[in-house]
Image (tube, rainbow, N blue to C red; front, side, top):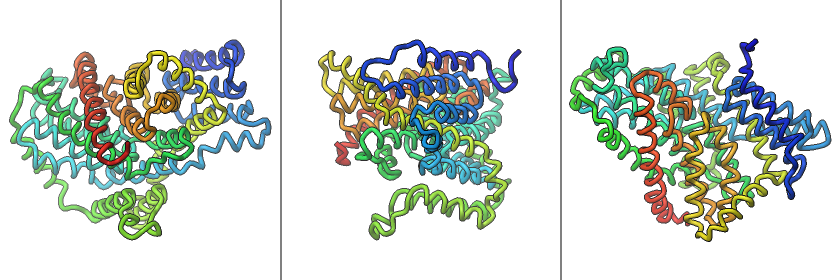
Length: 488
């Protein structure tokens, strides 16, 4: 009988994969036995996450237990449990967890909706303008909303639906093509781009920073400001092109939308004047951005440098002291505590796979096979990035995909002669941009796809087109931008 808490088929596949790798598949030459056994646990964890055998936090906690119980990191039980729990000491995990809690204030105060309706009231006279207003709204929210699902699906999507329905465009009436079809695609395809622009714009980004630092022996440690500056030009270009590309790919029936401006203005009037709590949220967001970009340190010296996680804690503390958020709000933010739990497990396993030498072995295998092609480092990493990007068709989680493949592909690229920072920035962008491909690519996609405005065929077609556009912009414009910045 099917358990209400466990999906038996993916759970069985997860356990079976671990048993096969542990007991049947021989350990390859040059691989440590403990590293291979940890790989078995890791593969089982990824399969359980992809198959949604249990909630991801539950899967992560079970994985932590098995790492400690099997002693794959240490023969000492006391050291093994310390190793298994070591992920919780990562400041990156707490940065994302705290930022998710802070972003709860967007919904609680109504500031997120106000920002969205404000941009629509300015740019909403044409359908294309409404598309840009949605994109700008998400861009403003992205630096302080590390849940891309909450941002694109929880804040922007209801605004998009309200606009579409005001024009009687809905799946129920069969009138999606009036305006809702186009706006839903813009709503979704903004999400991968903004997620690629800031470390704090989607939960897996800090994991990427950690994997890059581990692979380079901490020689490359990407800061919030470095990431944001590197993504600024290609990100803005993608946001500029995306609504236009989708407009010509799927032109809406309604081109002029003066009523959208009026609708947004009515919503803003109904919301009233900006509340004190909203003003506090704006002040906190401004403070976070100033400190995350390192502006005080740049102006006054390193004595004024504040760690990114400490900055997030400062922002949360202000919200708690002022009553914008209460401790009950913090406790009720389940997604934050869930994220902290599964991030801790995945970071721990990825760290020890690297320490035990498995990543170096696998990247060596990949490097050897590509070297035989006789290509330079640019075509070689192009192949690696394309493989990494388009294998997302087989993943329903960016976190699972990044954890499974990022470190090995990155290490292989470095071995093939790629500049580590350039490769890291390109793969970091690809890790978010690959969300564009399918209707199950990330948590935002089923929310927007489920609203019924876009058919699966149109969704996948748009995904392919936007993947080519986004990758092209990031490789060409991004590469030239990084050259101008002196990154290579």
